[in-house]
Image 1 (cartoon, rainbow, N blue to C red):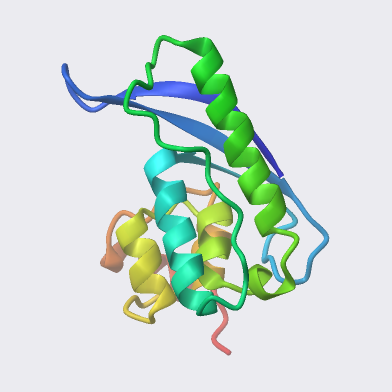
Image 2: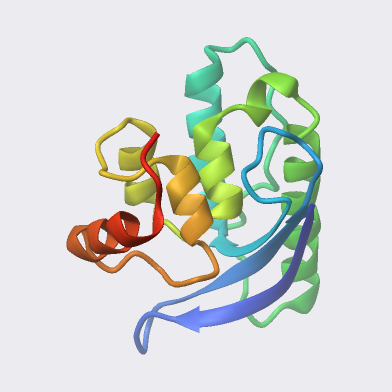
Length: 160
């Protein structure tokens, strides 16, 4: 796993954030795709850690994320680099746990373009698509609506 290519994104004139590319190359049978790439921001890593902690019921000691810095600056290359290294270390250590590898939140975080709300809905069965289907769609295009997804799935997926 690699965390790289930090990019500044602007929501509007006053609000901006950095997202990072997460590249995964794996031979693990736990993952649908063997090679994937997604972009995630720090707040999404925080969500992932919270979900993993809740899902493992304290059976696994999760690695720490780099600390949230109230003075973090989008213009400070050293701070961005340090955070990026900390996020990579978090993922490397997380992927060492066999129990965590099977977590659907981790899989969709690393291999789908779903937002946090859609990852949560998918992981809890509140969508018409599975985590595996969301991962397969990654790289083709994002889910635009439930109707678009149903049309695409009915034309391209065999039912099990």
